[in-house]
Amino acid sequence: MKNIVLCGFMGTGKSLIAKKLSAILRLPVVDMDKVIEKNEGRTINQIFSENGEPFFRELEKNLVEELSGKSDLIISTGGGVVIDAQNIANFTRNSICFCLIAEPETIYNRVKHHSHRPLLNTPEPIETIKNLLEKRKPFYDKIPYQIKTDNKTPEKVCEEILDIYYIVN
Image (cartoon, rainbow, N blue to C red; front, top):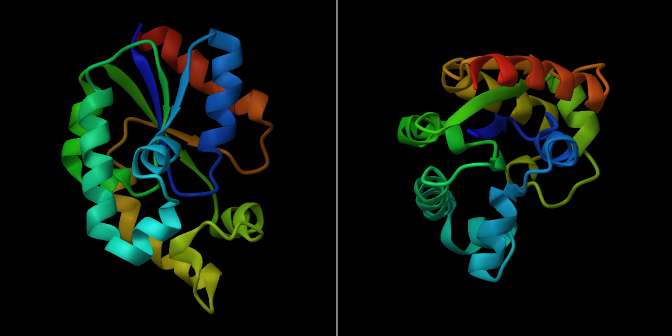
């Protein structure tokens, strides 16, 4: 079976939906951020502060290349994985990619108590979210299947993903 790849901005539900899909399909989840943290022996925050975002993006790209050669996985990506078009090109070789989307206010409400979000360590987090969403919109828009997660249960989001997955797989 093809992989299911969940892309989207932080706080759109990628990790939660990946876990729910895993329980339904009995496939393992790969949370890319957690794999990078394990491989590096430090948190994403530490990687960003010690080595910068470009270094992190290179780690991310290498992991995408590795995962794109595997199958039968549910992959939860980091929010910025879409910035490098090669990442999505690699994933689409053996995966069905979904972009989870939500309004800035929804995102903020979901992540405001999480201190591990390095891109939101700013005085105006909602403005930062809006600006980042605007910058990433052209990249997110290239992902074939868009699933809105605002005001939906995780079960409903999974149902929408699986309806598409079973048709195109």
